[in-house]
Image (cartoon, rainbow, N blue to C red; front, side, top):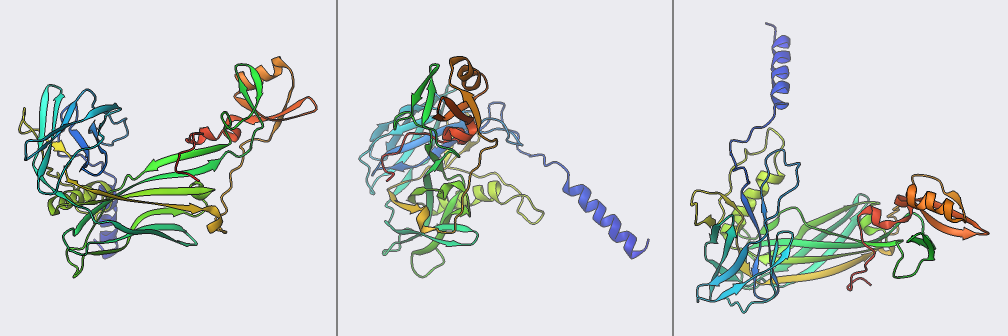
Amino acid sequence: MTRKALWIVLLATLQWHCIQSYVSPYKAPATGYLVVEGYITGNGPSTFKLSRSIPLPGDSTIPVVTGAQLQIEGSDNSIYPFTETGNGGYLLTSAGLNSTTQYRLRISNVNNETYLSDFVPYKPTPPIDSVNWISDPTGVNIYVNTHDPIGNTRYYQWTYNETWEYTSAEQSGFVWEHDSLLLATDSNQYYFCYHNDSSSLILIGTTAKLAQDVVYRQPLIFIPVSTQALAIEYSVLVSQYALADSAYNYLTLLRSNTEQLGTIFDALPSQPGGNLHCLTHPNETVLGYISAGTIQQERIFINYRQLPDWRYYIECPLKDTTVADDEASMIMFFDEQDYLPIYLNRGILTANVKSCVDCRTQGGSTTKPSFMP
């Protein structure tokens, strides 16, 4: 076989191997693994979410766990019960925790099973120094700065909640409600909307190998140029958490498994070992790592006027059409064909499809958050 023919065979073999489906060696139970997400804190609400893992390729709805009982237990025998909030969520509004006590989480009544985490130290989190942003031709990068002058933190995690204002492509002076044409007001308009989103990536950082416990320009969010988030007004609330080294290592492995796979050069997936255990069935895998400490937060705003070259545009999929100002015509268009009125001129209504006029079709809500300017 010539050298050229050998290379062709090798390349064909590699290509064939690259398109094979990955079969996970881990066999989850039919109900999936219990997934526990949350953070124990004493200077604000503690929120947890319970769900079940789903098999690959992960394109089905994630099932949430309801009807469970959660409580925080301190090494000083203190107990703080949670309240269920729905959709797999559980809330403890406040708790008198302190840095001299260790804490753990107990979960019961999940398929008649009980889960318990290890005791973890309560770590104070240093304040956020600043949340800033810089723009370039590709978009806006948002980053965080922080430091611990005592040098006791070293391991950090960040999450964020975004909110932005946007509009539909066309503004309507009317609304169609209960087979009636009404003037649009602040309470029933659907031109201005507000979209909420939260972090989905694992954002962690460490200064363990640095001389000082200083985090400088830790990347958090990238907003691509000309996208909706910065169409009018954008806000992000950044939360910062101090971690133990074991929690940081767990999240590092979890991030490697979920965010850094996909090429032949990536590490093979491995099963992360958290600090949650099933007391009823000790060999059962539980996904999650419980940490405890204070939370530090910082909110910033970015207005589109600060980005003169943003150039966000939205257009209607269809041209405006006219609708006669009579009940039969309006019912046909607004009830049967999913159009909405825009304006009325001399007995003729201008209308367009709902996706052009109603901002809610883009996933937001007309309810303005109290913190938005």
